[in-house]
Image (tube, rainbow, N blue to C red; front, side, top):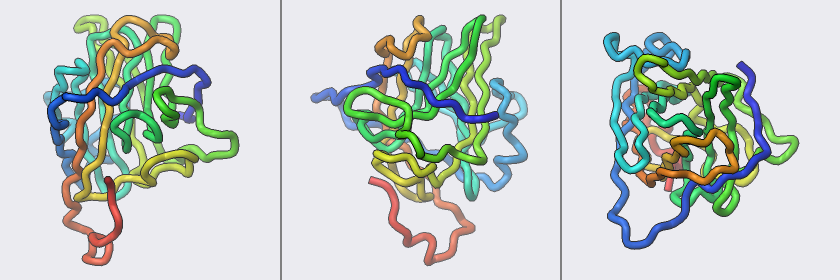
Length: 217
């Protein structure tokens, strides 16, 4: 599928003082991710499609994920009926790489955007999009669960304004999870949000030189 960019803005997150330190969630390395994951808007729990999962109570989102030598694979699940999003690289959304989507009976969309202050916007004209990514979003009418599933390159596309250029195994990064449980409009403010830390497990296949490369914040 081709990547789409959206013009609407939405406030996903703001710095909230006095909160406890963000939880650290570890994304495991698995060299078989490309073979084990089918990006189809459905998580096959019985077949252990993903190597790890956790539920974030603050945002109301459950995540399944893992990464291989070049890509991260993730599925976000919610019983909300509005938009849901993951932001990478910033705790207050500014300069975060944001993947946001929604599903409705009339349309289903997933967008890649860049955080600007406390909103987000389509990347500046002329910036590139991930060439090898994939995504799908769907809702299970029986369970009422909406699933946004995607594969995304560890080396981010050349989007202006990002806080980090990509994700390095062994490093820890800020991550935002947010959703509006009812509204699909990207102009609608979040109803639930959370700021976490995401740590990529070590990649046992990296050389010593690669392991010493600069990483996250």
